[in-house]
Amino acid sequence: MSISENIKAVEAKVAAAAERSGRKREDILLLAVSKTKPVETIREAVESGLLALGENKVQEIMEKYEPMAAYAPEGERIHWHLIGHLQTNKVKYIIDKVDMIHSVDSRKLADEIEKRAAAAGRVMDILVEVNMADEESKFGVKPEETEAFLHELAGMEHIRVRGLMTVAPFVENQEENREYFRQMRELLVDMNAKKIDNIEMDMLSMGMTGDYEVAIEEGATIVRVGTGIFGERIYPERG
Ligand SMILES: *Cc1c(COP(=O)(O)O)cnc(C)c1O
Image (cartoon, rainbow, N blue to C red; front, side, top):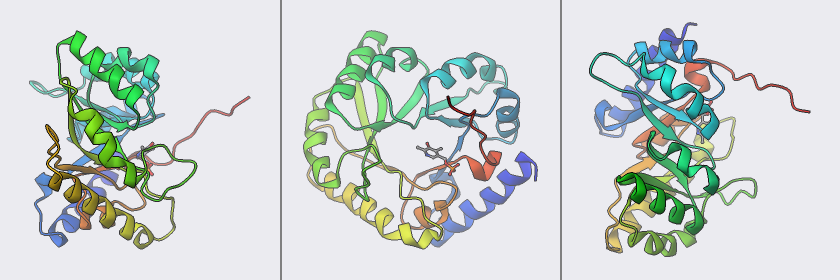
């Protein structure tokens, strides 16, 4: 299948899941995860109407930023989202390029974003990454650490906490992740109820190719879909 056909199929599933959750299609952002894909391939997704792109490496955003800008439709622009682990020393490279950072999980990283955003004269939208399944291999704060972390972020004037993000376990059957997605939504509601200064969250970034339908049913407002749009990723061999 071509990329535009893939997108049609994903769009249909997103719309159906949105309807099942009693929401509108427009309330959900389909983020096209373009990591490892070259600009000519990503261009097809942009031309099919997906202007929000997710990358997990700073380097790839740097390389693709200029060339992709040329493919945005007249009067519009590409919206880059950093979705992968971000090293503190690389914040400076993307501070003026991304619309949102999904993977904030430490005070050190937040301090650096605050500092660089202030210098750039902007407020950065961020999500707090939560390791919902408490997997050892995953980044993110533990669910029970979320409140304390939000208190640390509350005073940062150049950071706007928009919501929470999680990378759920890799599963064969997406139903296995439903409970984690449900708990994420509950965590968001609980945290908003704490009325922490400056913290009013309305975004849940959860769900990937294998589980975005269930994620939407449980309240996702951003789904991050790579393989389902672009096909399998081929990574260069290491070593
Ligand atoms: C790669 C990646 C995705 C997309 O994964 P697919 O299974 O290909 O849809 C989503 N989120 C993050 C954080 C990723 O690194």
